[in-house]
Image (cartoon, rainbow, N blue to C red):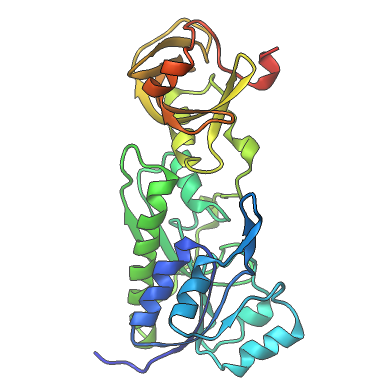
Length: 320
């Protein structure tokens, strides 16, 4: 069934937002402008790098804005001049003021990378893995002034792979979000979409992650550590200290083997990996990165840096 095209203004920044923008461009609606974050300096040379959304917008010749702030009267006036029917937001990176949320006749809708009200906040995909969610997914939400508190328009879910990392899950959720958004827009344009209130009792938070969040507490269960390592891969990564050195750990596998040794004790180091005692059973670590070195398989690492069974991984304060 054909519908009247919507005039859509898009706001997004990282790779996660790209499938949604590309789906909108290829869809029946008119993408009148794109708003993204300013270019950022990266690498040792501090070279300015454009956000992925900017690259797509320029490729298709769409009007592009990169404001340092989005609350100025001048910028709001610019947005109003486009007379958008709808603003679509996907990982833009800043909280929108009410003046923008209330600007389009259909308001603003957000592509959020979790099954709301679970994991409200800046890092929903990572926290979905860290918390061991059996189902993950995306929510299309009508935005309000709260942090991911608006009414739900549509949800879609998938089952993560047992060894899923945030790095492998991000593109899956991004693609799922783009498809779900297009279904939402079709129903919205035809007036056949009911909004559902979020259940505040089920709400959890997914705050922005910090590097220090990756410190492993080996007294926790092997399953919990397994989820933490995968959820923080590739950033900010899970880590522990051994003999005064910082090690980032990857590729975990729960081994249902009991141990009477102190949690964090290295029980075995061979080509299969590092077998480490956790709070209940054990964890096998298959990939490792020592500070100042590249990430590699444990089998390759041990060729140059043998590790002694019986030594204990832990926080830096325990390594003196």
